[in-house]
Image 1: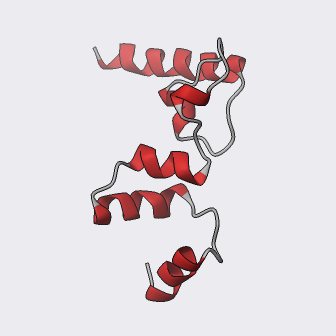
Image 2: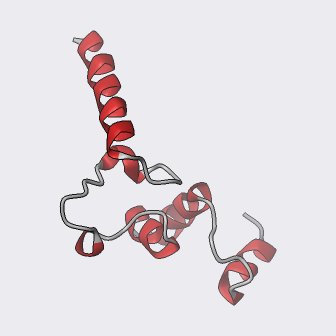
Length: 86
């Protein structure tokens, strides 16, 4: 990550850095990745989520929020993959 890019982040010229950039920053600064993802608006803090709407780990790394059906399908597929490892 260049100094110019960091400067643009600091001055607000870049308002929504990618999750990849946020991960690099979290590692370099010793800040929780999830915290930076929340601040950038990629995930919604637990306290602000609508009641009854699940936002599991599968949706955490998605740029766009998954529908309940999409999340269930993704979790079913993950369970399938994990069952093959046993």
